[in-house]
Amino acid sequence: MEPSIIVEKEGPVARLILNIPEKHNALKFDDLDTLVDALHDAEVDDDIKVIILKGRGRSFCAGHDYNDAVRSYGLEVTEPGVKPRRPSQRSRLLRDRKLGENYMAFHYSLKPVIAQVHGWCTGVGLYLVELVDLAIAADDTKFSHAEQRLGLAGNTWHLNTQIITYGQKKARELLLLGDNFDGQEAQRMGVINRSVPAEKLEETVEAWAQRVAQHPRDALVTGKAMFQMALDSLGGSQQFCRGYVGHTLGTNLRLEDDEYNFLRERRDKGTTATFKERNKVFE
Figure 1 (cartoon, rainbow, N blue to C red):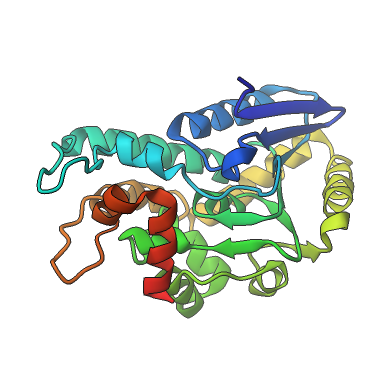
Figure 2 (figure 1 turned 180 degrees about the vertical axis):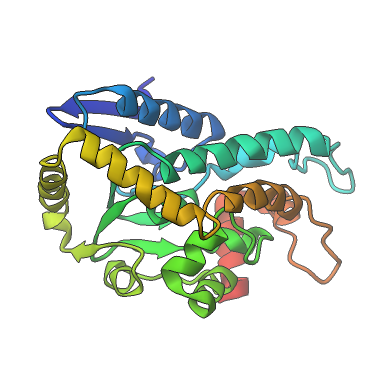
């Protein structure tokens, strides 16, 4: 089997490449752990000045691998009328704290990270774009926070960053509605720096990486540290503590009889069909 994360190093540039193209680079928890390990390796490599995060195949990242998430959280419904024995809150908090630490690793990376975005960019994919230093996307990229339709409704890992990026009202709109938006709209909202034609995406990202790499090594890490301190004065680190507790609560809901039960429908119809049905419910 090919690795889920490919690392390329060329001169001062490291490329972290998501390599699960058959699933639009939807990440299992272990894949995200591996990605963060690769990030840390690039941070300590003194030859590397800038890091590019990209996806192989048709998409950048379509979020978490939902089947993996359901199994990890003990939410698999296998028999009608029989509820699974869910993990303890303490074990759930430990898992979610690790997830929060993974997002935090990109937020607090020692070196600048540029996201190269195309295809689908949802859930964890969009979280990473929101948290890294720079982002360039293809015009036809499909962004969304559709993961919020799974019972989160505005409960995310990094609300401070999202409010700063989008503004309070727009952040609430994106999280409560979960609608798609394209690269040009993403640039207008400030979540990416540039939206370019798909055929220009890679060359634009590579050019930016080379320009960033002209700075001295110490200047890059000092500038990043100062930026992080400024974010901390706005609640940059506390947001992840709230995020992992909120995620544990948000993935342990009691659903009433008149509310759409994604897990029950998934048991009867399968994951792909249920995602399509869920989107119809919201749209």
